[in-house]
Image (cartoon, helix red, strand yellow):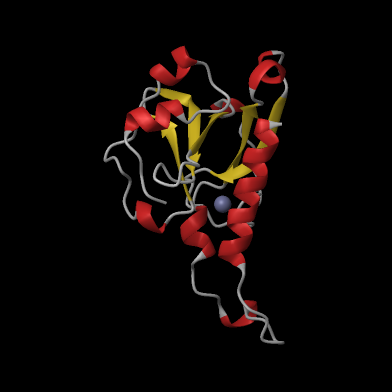
Length: 163
Ligand SMILES: [Zn+2]
């Protein structure tokens, strides 16, 4: 994705109030390394460790979308490794976390949420591009569709948050 400036990001939130998006903090450095290779950018708020964000689309393409996520408290984090719902690996060094997004609008304000397990380091785009190991390759020669599948899952998640 092309990484937008902070003002464009704040305007692109679909499930957060103006006052909350105003208090969003970006990670340093911004943009993150290798951002142009990513299908989405995700980060934990450097000043609020239980808040995270996922941005996808492009400011230039007019489909930039940001979703605010809530992270579980440290004591509520599962001890076992859970597969990420986006890249469908368990490869993140600290595993994946159940991240919960309030839905857009009135439904979200009344407590309706969408939850997904997502790699705790948001490294799904790079994992979907990791070369396949020998035993992972298709014996029938079927193409590797991990990147397309990741993009579809991110889009589906955003669509569910929009409701
Ligand atoms: Zn992942």
